Amino acid sequence: MLDYHREIILILDFGSQYTQLIARKIRELGVYCEILPFNVGLDEITSRNPKGIVLSGGPKSVNEVDAPVCDPAIFHLGIPILGICYGLQLTVKLFGGRVEKSVKREYGMAHLAVEEKALLLDGIQDGNVVWMSHQDKVLKMPDGFKTIAHSDNSPHAAIKSLDGGIYGVQFHPEVHHTQKGKKILRNFLYKICKTKGFFSPKSFVDLATEKIKEQVGGGKVVCALSGGVDSSVVATLIHRAIGKNLHCVFVNNGVLRKNEAEEVLDLFKDRLHMNLKYVDAEDMFLAVLKGVKDPERKRKIIGRTFIKIFEAEAKNIGDVRYLAQGTLYPDVIESTSFKGPSATIKSHHNVGGLPRRMKLTLLEPLRELFKDEVRIVGKELGLPDNLVYRQPFPGPGLAIRIIGDVTRERLHILKEADSIIRDEIERNNRFRHVWQSFAILIPVKTVGVMGDERTYANVITLRVVESKDGMTADWTKLPYAILDKVSRRIINEVPGVNRVVYDISSKPPSTIEWE
Image (cartoon, rainbow, N blue to C red; front, side, top):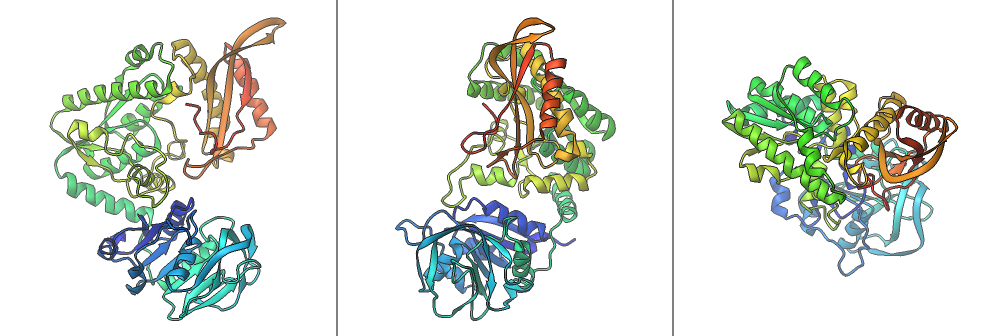
């Protein structure tokens, strides 16, 4: 079996919002890659024996006093290097060229003019659209380099070293708007770095299965199964490796979506025949949430209560040595704050929290993958589409989609409204591009007229967003016919609701969830 780790591309992150997108594009092209901070030590780089290095973009100017700089020695390792935007400008400056603030900034679409058919631009024609996002530009090229393409406002839009080992592009080949960006990245990987392409969902499944068998041996593994994509793929992958030695615990905390508990039990216990313990803790959770309005208190209460239940169930199983978690690569990046000069976005509950308290060895087979890769792996493992393409769901569940008190009555209203929007959007293949679509119950009542009678009832807010990774998001421009249908169904089918509104704010400045 070929280990895809034998071919690795390293991405040094200078703080670009697109760094994760570079990694995903490279993996889509069949090559494994990892993101490291811009100032990683030379020993760390050489120990991984990379086939190539990518220098990401970044928000700084290379001329700022505190501009991030990598170890210049990387350019003398004999490893192919591709600098993107800031990465190109840093390369130029380190080799003695000149980068200055441009009179005309260049954001958005530009047309590339190819000056030389270098390997990086093989198959790229004059006039191809590229996506720019920069204020600085190269004014003087360093010795030993030449220009291979320009745009109207970037005289050195693509460059290469004379020996053909170092390349740079002023634009962003990783974004969708760059017409042949994927082709440029493919050229770098296969024609310049000479990779073979060992990374694929199948190669991941096969290798991960063998690694789990080797690590766990005859030990028992306990997995908190939520029914979400990540924990479901983790459970299925580990079950494939060790069978009955996997013990899943599904805790119904009462703030799940309508029929969710039944759906999870049907799939994992009855159809996939896993060891699954179902714990109905709805009454317990609603009791500890009674009267709690603050969203952070809700999160902490739900987290503490879950841990208490999960610890007790793990103890009942007996002789458990491993805890399986659905930690993903973005969780690791964000929680360890190693994303170069970027700010830490949030701290994830499943990175180093629960296992320390439980004193179990952590098993995280998905920690190298992005969310879209996890979905592909789920398909490879044979999981059904309705689970693989299920939208992300917050750990505290509907408790943070009920603004204010969480009561049985309010929970019932939200579950019914949320079920309708799931029927019309989440379960409709037309809207698979949607990242999340859900209902929110706000603590506001309004006057209405139903059946010629005055009503004073609840307001439901609909939130539908598009995103790649949840870090940024835009509200979805749903067809009016769909909005009309969802609104009518909620008002007609859910007692206690007489008004539906639609949230049209993006992230940033808003967040996806309201709490």
